[in-house]
Length: 323
Image 1 (cartoon, rainbow, N blue to C red):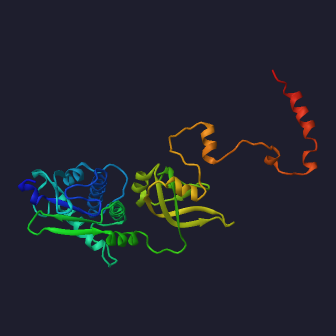
Image 2 (image 1 turned 90 degrees about the vertical axis):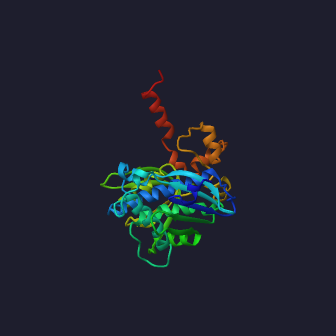
Image 3 (image 1 turned 45 degrees about the vertical axis):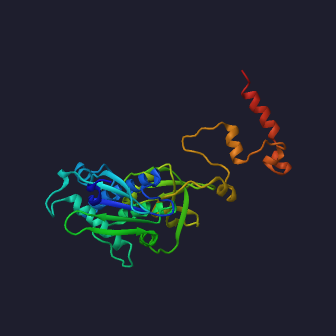
């Protein structure tokens, strides 16, 4: 570790049973870095009164202001610490530095959003909370605590993010709602037309479910296409009592259900979106066996149900001779 690493612009300290001194799984670090970076971009938008989940490419100004370089990955006895730095061109005067304002709002806001109060801190909206929730998925992978320290300017800013704060953020996202329903499955279709944003969820078993989602969830939906997700909201019903669609209030990407879980729930047919197995493989996955007794296909029936059948077949053959 170089001398400059000890006071890097931003440090992220990872602790947990699966984190060793100066060592952690690459996939976990990439996931944390990706979600943290997206979270910062969403805070930057929210600070400018723009919905953080607005669809579309982020402006070059935001990307440039928030860009970070990793300059070190060291141990913190027994933690692993990532050291991140900005370039000199990003450092502007106090009050003019959008990147500084964003990271300070994010680090300070984690403490507030994960606390007992109901008010959201500046720069935070539903989209930011969802990204913090996604960072918290590492708490299921052997990471128990993350500590963020912003070292720039006179007063450093530090906050810790753990399972307790992540659960509080989940509570904020999943506001109490009467008749709230939750569905899990693969998201295989999404329509982003302003006239009616819809998506379709395919559960491991049973028919697909049509859902409607607001503009505020468009970015989350776009990220989750072809993935297994958990959605929740209020169901809209037909006058007959049949479900019409689910009005989504929350969507979250989840791991694909294990084969053992699928078997326990009676679901034996799993597939990838672009997979195209032969008919025999489809039959095997669905547990379909060859038919030995064709009467099982049409049931017992009544004799009168078959009256005129043979005559109709004879007539059809006469009118459509085999060539």
